[in-house]
Structures are given as C-alpha cells and as structure tokens.
Amino acid sequence: MTEEKISSVNEFVKKITILRRKNPASNAEQWFFRGQKCSSWGVQPNIFRNDGLQYEHTIIDLAQRQNPLEFRDCTSKFEILTKLQHYGLGTRLLDVTLNPLVALFFATEFSSKYIKNENGHFDRQIHDGKVFYKFANGNSLQDLHIRIALEIPFSEFGKSQSLKEFCNRLFDNKVVSKEEYEKIVANDYDMVIKQLQTNSFIVATNSNVRLVQQRGAFLFPSAINIKTGNDIKTSILSKAREDLEKEFEGVFIISAKNKKRIRKELDFFNVNEATLFPELEHQMKYIQSQILSTIGTVEEYQPYQQNKHHIKESTSSNAPLKYISENDIRKIITRVLGNIDVNIQDSVYNTINNLQILDWQLKDSAISSIRRAINKVISEKFPSVEAKSKAEEIVNYLLEVQ
Image (cartoon, rainbow, N blue to C red; front, side, top):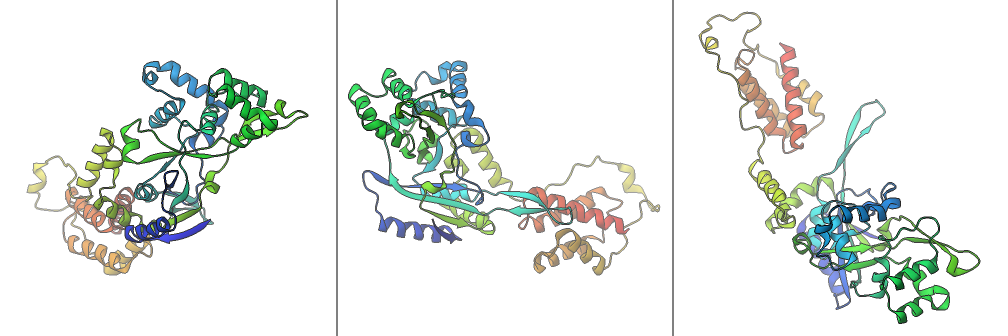
C-alpha cells in the first residue's frame, strides 16, 4: 500500500489532484476516502469489533420491533442499516466519503492514550491520523451482488446454514428472480461463492442530511466463511470478521503535531463539525468551541468577606508571599512541564515573577489569577484539561515553597 505524509490542506489537495489526474472518475468508478484519527487502528466496521457479529441478526431484528414507526418509510434493507448506523447502532457498514476533505477532517481529530513506562508511570502517546483512499466501482443497490450481500446481516446463520439453504432464502424472499437464482446456483454455485466473499463500495442514497453533508458512502463487507463438505451445496456458511485495510490502495499520514493547524485550515474552507454534523447538538458544540477558545479568562467565584479588607496586620498563616528565587521557579516549571520549549518556559517564569508580588496567600482570587495566567500561556501546547491541571500543579508547588 502506498503511504505518504502530509502537513497541510494545500499539500493534501495537491496530492489528491495528482491522483485524480492519473485516474479520472468515470460513471462507474469513483474515488472513496476514509479518515481515522489513530493511525494504528485497523479498518473494521463496528459490528466486527469484539464479538458483536454473532448477535448481528438479533440486534437488527430487536431494533426494528422495538421502534417500528422509525422504519416504516425505509424502502430497502440498506436504508434500515443506514438508519441504525446514523443513530449509533453498530452495523457492518464502514463509513467512507466521496469528499477527501471530509476524510481529512476525521483524520485530524485529536487522539491519545496513556502507556505505562518502565518506571511504572504513565506517558501519554499522541496518535497520528490516516486518510485511506481507493479508486473503485461505486455499486448501486440494484446490483445483484449487492442485493445478495444485503441479505447477510438480516440472516441468522447459526451453525448449520448451508449454501443451498441461503440461496433458497434469496429466492423465497424475492431478493433474486428465478432467472437470477438459476444463474447463481449454476456451475457448482461459483457465482454466489464469489459474491459471498467480495467486499463492495456502495454509493449511499441520501436518506439523511448527514450523509448529504458528508458525501457519504459505504464499504460493505460480505465476509462469509464457506466450509466445504462432500457436496458443495451442503457447505456450511458462517459470518466472519476481517480487517478491510486491504481494500484500499493508499494512505496519507497526518502527524499529530499538525492536526490542530490542519483543522483550522479546514474550518476556513467551511469543513467543520457544524457543516458535517447538521444535528442541533453538533451545531451548539461547534459554536461553543469557537467562542470558548481561550481558557482561563474568567475569575473563580469567591464570597465577599469585608473583614479581610480591614486587616492591617498579617499573622503567620496569612503572611504575604515571600519572594521566590528564579532558580526555584524554574525548577518547578521543569518538574511540571518537562523539557518544553524554552520560550514557553520563559513566558511561564515571567508570568509568575510579575504576579508574585501580590499577597496571594491572603487573597484567594490572586492565586486564581496566577493559575489562569499560567494556563493561558501553556494552553497552546497542551489540551485544555491537561493545561488546567498543570497550571494547578505549578501553583501548588509554589505554595509549598512558602
């Protein structure tokens, strides 16, 4: 599989344009893309993860029986699956898109995990992202092999579903016509065997607004194991899971350090959470992320205590903060932030040094002021929650020096 690194929207678009020139989309073939926020993940639809596949038929059946009115307007089994997926139920549909910028948006989502190191502590590992791509046929719901494949998630295979029984089910349920049935069972079921082990890209019907906004499409895996016996028609079928990475021909790697900047560039082109997820909850989340981009600018609430403003003498417990040396301050900064950029270290030091003349043991609001100021300085280097925690830790160390 071809693998390239990209560091900006401009670079990404140039590389996609080159690919498109080499293989211009036709009526049958199209470019399909998938973005994943973690480059180490496999490519699997939700139902293939863990052991959910064994309950596939039961989950779909229960969802329809429990909410029949939600599915009354669905005209195909594919629409049922897309509706289930839209509302969060895992299916074998793997989301892809016809818009490369949409895939890039999903690949630039922040992702991390904590890994235990040799000292028994935990280090945070920040993940690169990936955009997969493939130039392939976009199949319609009327194609024979798609109609056959769509019967799989609605069928209970158990441990005794034979190839002949499955084909008879297709005919009995009017999935295939008599002529098509004769075709798929001819030559020792060669055609249907091939179709049961072929994964296909499906261009989505615009059954919901999100699919329209995201130029949504799907990779639909058949993934059926066929255990042959003495007679091919008595072969036992079973559902299986597989990693679908092999279905793509290339991938772009997005470094974790470039994700935030690329997201800002995508926002300029109106590719953001608000446009890709038209539901109200996502609209509000996007608005909040834009307005509340600066953390630590609002003071913490403190009850007014009049007597504090009239105290003339300081007790030992309320003594003004003594001057902390530059060496001590820098030791604390290094302890909490590690070997961070020198400019950031200097900014944090200057923030503390300029504010430490305040009587911040006496005034809790002054402590909050220093905490917020530090938080603002380091927020560009750390996620908001972590920046807030590190600012708190620095202030606590400063107070211990007293």
